Amino acid sequence: MALLHSLFALLFLLLSLQLHTVSCALLLSLRHHHNTLHQQRPMIHANQTNCALFVGTWVQDDSYPIYQSSNCPIIDPQFNCKMFGRPDSDYLRYRWRPLNCDLPRFNGVEFLLQMKGKTVMFVGDSLGRNQWQSLICMIYAAVPQTQTQLVRGEPLSTFRFLDYGVTISFYRAPYLVEIDVVQGKRILRLEEVDGNGDVWRSVDVLSFNTGHWWDHQGSLQGWDYMELGGKYYQDMDRLAALERGMKTWANWVDSNVDRSRTKVFFLGISPSHTNPNEWNSGVTAGLTTKNCYGETTPITSTGTAYPGVYPEQMRVVDMVIRGMSNPAYLLDITMLSAFRKDAHPSIYSGDLNPQQRANPTYSADCSHWCLPGLPDTWNELFYTTLFY
Image 1 (tube, rainbow, N blue to C red):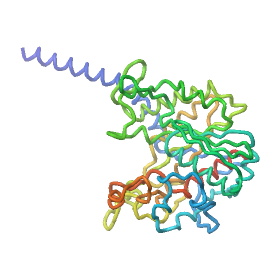
Image 2 (image 1 turned 90 degrees about the horizontal axis):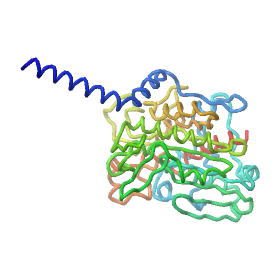
Image 3 (image 1 turned 180 degrees about the vertical axis):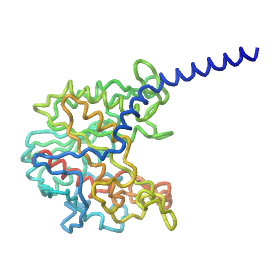
Image 4 (image 1 turned 135 degrees about the vertical axis):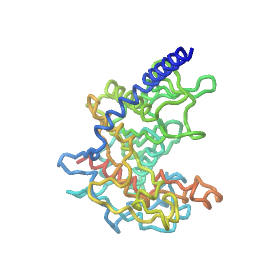
């Protein structure tokens, strides 16, 4: 009898291991791919002059910022750090200098003339909205007397420079793939773009982003179930889900976007700064905060070394874009942004109430970015790759 029980236990264990292996096949494939890249530096892209745009240093420059928040008509309270009491200003006076070139100065009039009669659309989450509003502020600073029109909607918001026929839009799609509500439950469909894509096809310049929403847990999680291969899951490995969703997006772009008329960009993963150990070399003694609160200077650049832990999500993004038939241009802002622990709203966000501002350990926003601020550099790089 004891032998029979032992055989049954062994059989049950083997069956459990087999089921576990099947359910994790996508994850194991992903991990194998990541392990081959683990020791490599992030991929460096170059423009037409072979300038390594995304590797360099931050230098102080008193000619920045390009605009003042009080003079821009579109900044959300969430990003308007000056309006909500941020006392320091040195974070506004940094310029990104690539290792072997200088970026051209952003010229809002040139942008409008080059894009006359055309549409630029940012598609993604609130980091995409951060960049969308930054670009509008940068352009508006050059033509403050021009006629404009703002229409806010869900999921599409548009800002038009009427005298130039230029439309700068934001389409909210935090996962890029479809999310439906069925019988009160939110279904994240990892293999469908569907209705989202109808609006994207006719745009002249598309800039996509995703990332942060794939990690949300609890009340911040944006779905109740994920659908993959006709089956429904309450959860799965988040990197595996991101890879599947990214591949769906990439296949849709390859099949549906006319690349002879539409330029396609993808914004790299925007890093958060929630762990001071990443910029204090593991020294915890004497630290007064547990996140970006109180940070007023960038992390010192050390050449091509990434400060902290390189985001695993970025490896997925890199892999999927490399696999496209006609790859999107990766605006690889991850490393240069990782140095800017000083550039987040922290407690100076209009989304926080007084009680939350009094408790920065739990409430500081270390994911988004102040405007003016870091997204302006993203757009200087965007401008450079569009026109130079």
